[in-house]
Length: 97
Image 1 (cartoon, rainbow, N blue to C red):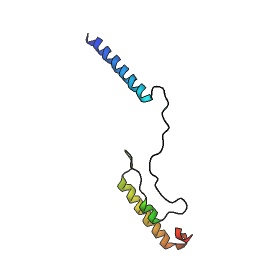
Image 2: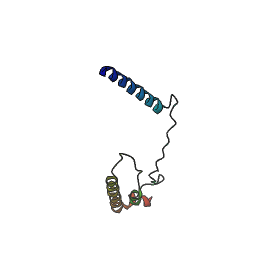
Image 3: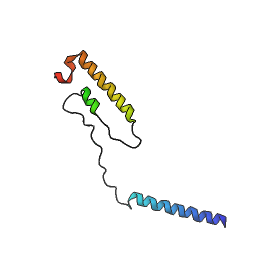
Image 4: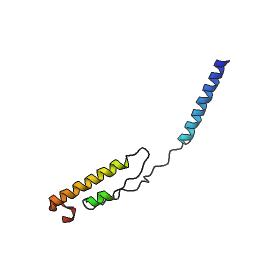
């Protein structure tokens, strides 16, 4: 008797998993096309980036995404390096174009 009950439960579990899979698959219908709902990073595309552009950049949040503090630290460093380059070589500054 215990072995029969085990098989009954095994069949029920397989049927339940099959039903869940059919629901998840949409019963044979294709999935709707995905669209990107994330905000743009909002950096200028028509000119070179400046240090202030890097400071204003904000990335969208995502489950299991990047650590915001690490991204902010990297952007701060890039902004500082951009300012140093512009101060050392004014001809390469974005505003000099």
